Structures are given as structure tokens and as C-alpha cells.
Image 1 (tube, helix red, strand yellow):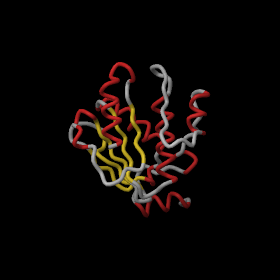
Image 2 (cartoon, one colour):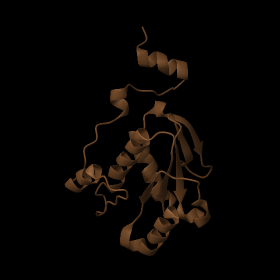
Image 3 (tube, helix red, strand yellow):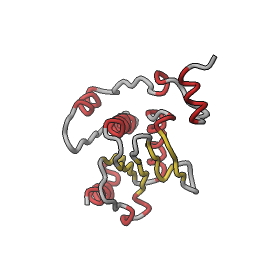
Image 4 (tube, helix red, strand yellow):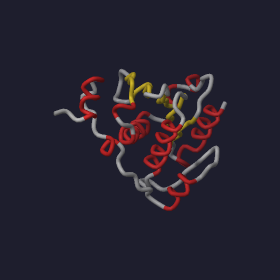
Length: 166
């Protein structure tokens, strides 16, 4: 006998659908700063830390949670290079359930999507600075996840930040 979620999966033709409890892994903030980051009600949030401190995972969890709370909006995930954007995409895959994704438009050159359309009508675009400043244009972007490498590329990171805000 098929369970309810298996019947839905068959109807919607999702090959790898999993139950709700498995789709949203338990998330534990990596540090006190991460807990404060999630608790903050500020309009612009920033999380700073050393290499391998859990910044990308923490911010990705907050970003995907935001897409769930505010459906039907446009979101950007931005990084300097495709390698950094690939890390962001891997975290997004961890926190997005298969049935939340309506469509993925893949890039030809690698395994990072151009955009992901979400069930509530939202859309996450994946952008890199290497593509040029001209790609940072849209009518209205609700939230931006900016994943950058701090002082090694501070001037470029500031340019990316300013381009996203303009």
C-alpha cells in the first residue's frame, strides 16, 4: 500500500521525493554568532568568520528559510567565482526539499543552475561577478545571499555589494 507522500510523488512524478522529516535536515547553528545572526531582525545581515567556520551553511539556511516565509519573490545568490557559487548551491540543495522545486534551469558549463523556480512562485538566480556587472539588474530583488572571501578580495567584494544594492 502506498503511503500518502508516495502517492503524491507518483502523481507529481518526483523520482527522489522523501518524507518531510528527512527533507529538512535538523540544523544546529555552528556558533553563538550564528544563533545571533538567525535571531537578528536587521534589514542587512552580515556574518564574518574564519575559513571553514560554517558561514556559508548558516547564511544558506537563513536564505532558504526566507524564501519559504516570503513566496513569490526574486532572490539572488551571488559569489565572486563559480567555485564559491557551487558551494552555495550545495548548501541550498541540503535545505530545499525536492517538492519545493518546480524547475531548474542548468548552466551548460558546470553543475550550478542559472535559476531555480520554487513552488510558491519564487525564483532564486545564481550569479557570479565574473559574468560582469551588467547581470546585476532586475525590477525588484527581495533578498541577496552574498558569499565572498573577505580581505583577500575586499575591493571586488565591495563592488559586488554595491552592484547588488543599485
